[in-house]
Length: 156
Image 1 (cartoon, rainbow, N blue to C red):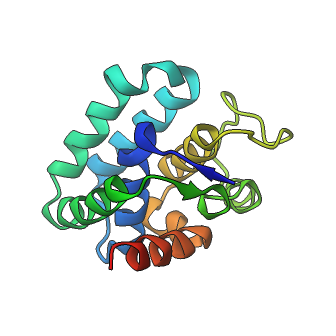
Image 2: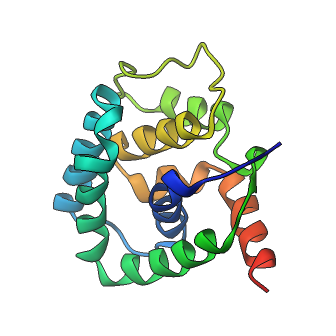
């Protein structure tokens, strides 16, 4: 099944860029990601108006992350449809969440399989953002590797 990702381009581009990020995020960056995850858990409808701009500011403040993010964002914007099986899988996100001691699962429910792409991406953003080491947590989401391969193949 194919989906459109226009509302989720920034979140997906961020996750992909963070997966490629070779450095360690600063403590203020990690704190901002925790705040973003908390807000996304409790107020997902505030994504476009409040949460997404905060994420974009964080990305722009980190030159290496911003450069990679821009590449992925451009490639994602060129896609009309994306196979839903390339999005972060519930099982992968659940496994990462199980390892984290500080994760509070309020705001989403792993007992339910998300039926839409927004919830899949949202769950991944929340778990990565609440991780003590977000750049390590995102590397555990193997479906993002398949997504990267798909968008790279599609852009050629």
